[in-house]
Amino acid sequence: MFKKILVANRGEIAIRVMRAARELGIKTVAVYSDADKEALHVKYADESFPIGPAPSNLSYLHIPNIINAAVQTGSEAIHPGYGFLSENHHFAAVCQTWGIKFIGPPADAIEKMGIKAQARQMMKEAGVPVVPGTAGTVENMDAAKRIAEEIGYPVLVKASYGGGGRGIRVVESSQQLGEALERASREAKSAFGQGDMYIEKYLHRPRHIEIQVLADEHGNIVTLGERESSLQRRRQKVLEEAPSTAIVPDLREKMSEATVRAARAVNYTSAGTLEFLLDEEGKFYFMEMNTRVQVEHACTEMITGVDIVKEQIRVAEGLPLSMTQADVALQGWAIECRINAEDPEHQFRPSPGHVTQWLEPGGPWVRVDSGAETGYQVQPFYDSLLAKVLTWGRSRDEAIDRMRRALSEFKIEGVKTTLELHKQLMQDEDFCAGRIHTNFLAERIKGA
Image (tube, rainbow, N blue to C red; front, side, top):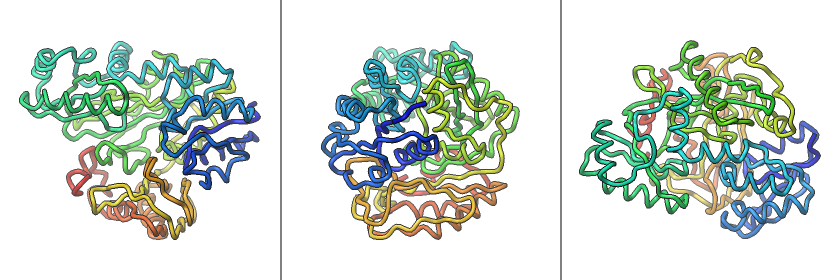
């Protein structure tokens, strides 16, 4: 068993990992930038270590500083959380070089699945359905036009590297293709250092369905059902739930089998997520694999009783998974609302500032994962997520009713938040009936 783990992250996910470690009797080390010296994750950890100035490229993304912190504190392993260095295959390899266990998949698995055009081709070869599109990246404009014509407009041009909705454009006609490719490539190169692009068919009103997978170093692979992540704003998830109203047992089994094939194809270990698009005819297509713990992993935990972060730690220690597929049972329904420090009335622009009041909801079957508190300073340097509010119910209706109550109890003052948006969603007739898709918010909310 590990004696000490360094958590290379901040905010709610850092605290989430530390809680799992504490239950396992493992000491934790928090790292912090100059801006986060008084942050809650720093207070929660057993010890802490400074890693640089506020900008993330000088602190949370600065690999030498992270490794130095691990060495100086005697940490045996590093958990990257999500975001920052969590899907950086170079960081995973550097950890191995220094004799520090990376609590995540092998570096080569991260690299294979991180190049999306390559991952798409690998999945196709593994028998996982993919959206019709290019076999690799687009070589030139003539090839792009030919491929788009063959697929049929509208199409998506997508960056081969990166994620988070950046480097993606919807193209309705050949006249738009050149400009869309150029802008998306430039955006991707700025964000991820690579501008390679690929093209695939655009699905108008699909659902975004993801399958949670766990795999250990002994060849055991377990799937934990699906999550619905269709409610998005500019391809950034806003609300998630598990299971999905669109998935029947037979379809769940087929998607889970495809996920296992994908994991085996890249010798995957640790926690991961296969993301799929589900069209209106019930056909599913591979979109990408997230080689890390997801923001929305807690939805799955609430309907399965499996602590995904603990399983990650167990796998990193060389232990087998604590359950088999036969042990996995989905019970009830879970909903997660992401509460961001953003102003919905002004196109969701970030709202940094001082939190003057913070009162979280409570009661039966309510979970709040957060790194904020009264007096917390919302920084302009990092992601705007303040808290994840989760509710569980025996049915979807009960989970929604409980979420309405929980959101009404949540009091945040001092910064603008998306709290009211989620209250509106809980009253939306189509949402409550499960009639949702990836364009749901864009069709209802200005600026979404």
